[in-house]
Length: 465
Image 1 (cartoon, one colour):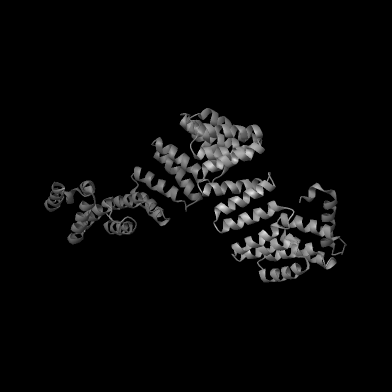
Image 2 (cartoon, rainbow, N blue to C red; image 1 turned 120 degrees about the horizontal axis):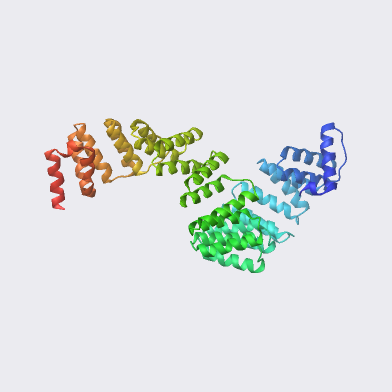
């Protein structure tokens, strides 16, 4: 309830807040208290809601609705036993009050008894005048149980009861998406649109389903219908822009993205997409300008910094690329995507110690791709840090056992450390896994490769195979 739209409610609220400031005790009827409490709860002002409940019950100690508000607050505060005790008393007095069942279900849900919560809510269905709300609650309980089919059905019943409940529609789509039922989702949306042909939300969802199916022409038509239904629907313009990008119609995509800038405050995502379009068109200065606008709008959006960095990497301007990736790292030094680029750029610039630091940081942050382990190893070899390189590869083997690229590197490293037994073990294992990777030893350890014993083992194995 929005009190600002009702002068009488506004007056009640003003009187109540004035009473709190002056410590005067003013009388309010129970309905006024309900409106005041509801307003505070909807706006997240729980301390004021509690005060209103306390004062309300002091003036109207028998009011069931005020007691239910107190129970709602107790449930929010996880004081479940007290709330349950109050509900039991109320249920004995008013067994036909649907809100009692709803609050009881909320308590069961908080205790992770979702199946029991559903049973209680189904009892509420028999007496409620607002089935949409109850079906929505049942749907949420099914989601907690990861029962997406029944959740979908409940939200559908909710939408049948209230065709403008778009949160229910979004939840239905969430269930379809989780169940990977895109065709079924489109069929359902078309049925809904037969009754509500100008529902921009439904057209938007149809477009997203076709987009996921890569049917871009149908997606485009759906987003056009969404815009016809509501020409201020920013989400439809953004999705239409993405479709136009996929179709290679970059000028039209830019036009749609720019429309969103006119309809609402600019977003970093919009600037990023416009920049990508300009880059595809070869308009590099305009692309760069929009990438910079993107990071200015939201310095925490990693895609913006990555777009600028990759832009300069493509131009082989590694100094500029390094400058921008350093700026990005200064903002968020826990972003593994930044450190991977930091490592690659420094490697291109032959700043090997910094490159090794970048790869190590990537691994520390959980980037366990084979390439990261291998690249770091090769740099450690160039730096002459063989012990660290061996340790790095043995860690890599935990994630990538029986990998020829690792085995041949370990063979070369152990030969370099004069640990012949280990070296021959890894050489033979590498040859068994994939003999063609012997080139690793030839490139990284040419002196080892030229040893007569090593060449004999490699040649005999290749000849046998």
